Image (cartoon, rainbow, N blue to C red; front, top):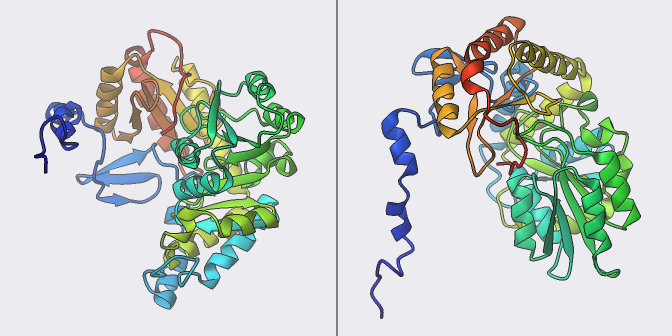
Length: 406
């Protein structure tokens, strides 16, 4: 047998990867930070309280007493795990309740719950498509959508972000008998902008394409929480809606909603469902309770939008750019990687937690996101901190496009 050499050893690339260790030595490494505690709008790190402006906990429900109580009760009643795939022994009545109530909330006939949002997108796209099919995907689509397209083996065609005319041109060039699926986000996770769903869905109808919308960041945020399709009044024009529970629904898991026939097919073909352990009882109960709170208290969505608008106005007054955001995701572009990291570090020292984003995930920026439960006092502290950094973070070129969501 041949001995492992530098040329043949796949582990040789470990030593070549030095960027992260170099950042660690500078004290500017921003990833995998351990937190001492998490109370929604604030977190604790090394004993200090920080205002959390980097979470996707849009409605602040992870700290809601009803959500926590439901998770505890499910743990007591069902144990810590379902110990298997839903396809076999891991299916419980809580999964079915969540599917039924989520489908009705989203305005679809049926839904299918999976273990994570990422697995949902992988499983749905891979189950639907074959190598003879075409999938047309927005170039800013989430990584899970990209990976699902690649996994399926379908022929991938990219179109410029939110460019319905370019999508139409791509569809026009396909063979007449080629099955085709269009894949977009409802709310884009790095820009905070909305899919141009009216134009995209019209193109899909014109060219006979099915449409999948990943509404991970739209659920709980738009149209009383019902998401992007409901926001535009186009729920019937979207064939499949995928969501995650790790954002507005204060848990972990994901789901796809669509027709009864589509969900039945996916139940028996989505490998990420069939060969993964199911959502834990505690996670399922937490998501179900959060969904019920969202359904019964739509004023939470109004508070969320009001808080995001307050921040946008404050940052604009301070001369801080926020791109095309109209949602609680507010990106703040920076001149480059080092400015991103140094500003992130100074904000941490000021008691503000935000997310630094670097290429290749996206152009350099500080990604902020806000919650319905942030107080005006907390938001004003954040605005003040960014105002003091305004000159240092103003980009040399005014551009926040060209993003590949992470």
